[in-house]
Image (cartoon, rainbow, N blue to C red; front, side, top):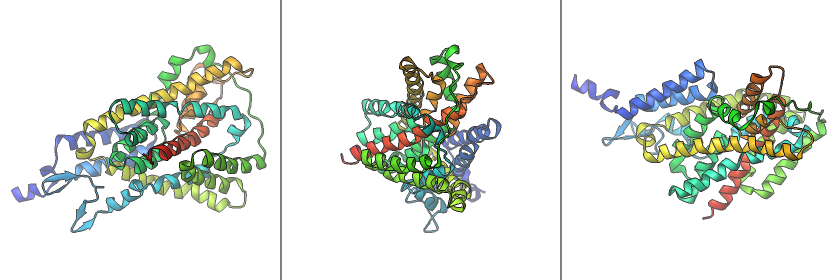
Length: 382
């Protein structure tokens, strides 16, 4: 009986594993009951359950399923190879390819000034970078932590794999957790910073955008962003590639595959891979908790900056902007835009701001990729 018990997970379980299992169950509950990003939270939750319900112990020490030393019978586990794409930054560009194939830039092109809201929301990234430095994190780790404020999981994974691979697990979990909890985190900030009169603002209908504009825009975007922030070329390049598949009109099959089965497969791999990295031994540390706190601060600052900048634009603009769409400047596509719509309709069910919110939302995707490129170009050379 003793030999049998020693061969079970009970022998290696600790309070940390139980706590992480509870976190995984909360993720799955929120995904199923509240519909908070189920495509992300369910794979991540399953990965956390696997990593903590069946902990691996080598030499009496518990290690992560995704550790380079994680072996079974002398061979790497399948989770090691699944996590390889996360650890080496392979999955993020592929996710961007699928996002590009799903993206319609018409809403941004119809009102180009909304790009400023996407830029303003990146304030949270650099403010948190400074905060992380103040807490004693070295510059490379501070940059990787700050990018959580963009609420862009793939970008956070990509930059962390380059600047601070040792922090990849907590940063990835934090980034995807805050992405999924957008409907819970953003509304209180949006209501606090706006008046009812501002939330009732109706914006002019977007103009019709020509096919030529939709084709030229992604190409120019890639050229400009690559010149300003060369480090962003990989992410923006794949985003633009996916968008051209969509807009060219001659690669419908490729575009359909990229935005459906292809991106679904990568989402499963990245979700479970990120979850597998969250074993209690590597995750429940003071450093990880600090990262979560800084990530929450970063996300809140990004949301507030977008809303406040929209209010500032209204002081000098003849065409008023509903400040709620400023919160969509964070890169959680399309959830932050949906939240703007939800809060606006709480005041007036006939007010539709979703199409306007998609403008800063897509600008935020490009902005966070550029911010990552800037941080990589600067911090990667230190």
